[in-house]
Image (cartoon, rainbow over all chains, first blue to last red):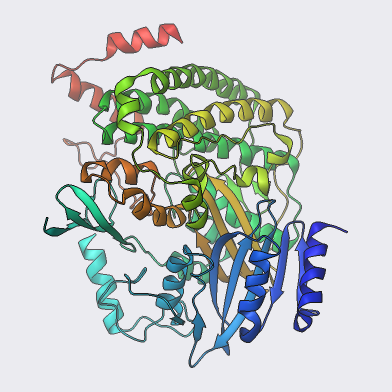
Length: 162
Length: 405
């Protein structure tokens, strides 16, 4: 049995709800889907017991009905576990993972800015990457986002100044 | 002493890219440091969703002018994985060779910038002159000095022939000799050692917890390198060492990059020798079947990651990019804690930041004939004349160098 299969089995044994939701995509790539409630427990287990000590990045996805969040974490032997979870489209709320990975802050701010996911537990700090005068409620990575007049003005102002 | 908050940037904060830093000082001592990013955000991820896969190859290549091959390779690898394409071996070797040439030009560029930041401009002049050797090779192989356009989905667009191989090998010999000189310089030149040692300290533990990548992590004793840990292209067939150092400061980061240059020359020679013959690409479908892939790449600055999600059309559903600087920038506050303000430029420069890179296309017109565009050779001749008219003439020095080579 490969290390990837072993990790997948280990996760399924520990978390019954993950049964059928983990797949080994290829060597060194494992994808798992978890619901929001058990996400933190699975993440903590993967970090502490399965030694996924590196956070590669967090991907945010607009899935029309919900907002998907994929946490790509890696081990020193090159195996990457992508843990996917979803939050509601209307009121997207997720807890910060900065207690596990302090470096997650910038990735979480990016998701907050571009997809409008509220990250609970994130301390004060600069926004990233949109400008400070970006209009409220405008999330450019959402599929239904269209440039409106105020966003257009900010983009134009930046281009003119560049 | 009263604390003073100094805003640095966003225009030209010690580097040639927009970035805003806020530094709280007590006298000359840095008490707190925060960065505001995003001045170069161009919405490339969103733009990728509106274009076809093949257009995106060229778009993601333009995320960065220095490590453009890093982005295009990471992207095509993800798309190829989703489409189930098996890329010919020769194409993988060519990708690897371009990748290492890119690392050489990037590390030499960094060495010059580092020299400049500490007032050692002779080092800048020397390294940037030598860097032209690898830039010429990249231009010969791909047609471009930057944004090479060598990658396509399913392989590469240009082959490498025997005369090009001989040119690369000659260039590697020249650069190897020059790098040996820089290594000697870094080990013996007291001014350089004293200026860089104990500056920008990042302990092994901090580098791990803050998620440092690339030479920044390796100079804090973390033997982490995607080429070794999660091999892609032809790296699993090449022999190389992961260069680490335990100085945990800017001096260590210098030694790591110099060591990596020597490894790159070795890897290129081996790849050229062992590169198999055969096709350089396979036909890729216009529409990519639904699926997702996560691709990693060791760029000159550290790990670059791309995530691509396909929905069965000719355009991606989502493209996510995490460039290495975003990971490394978070270590800078730690490096500057309780340090002198004068160390700020070199400490920031030492992570080799790349806030977005190239701006836009420019065309250069001849001053007296505005409808004539200057070609590369014209521009070079024009600059030589410009300096000569002002009493600066490198003819003798150049002759001496070419005789030695």
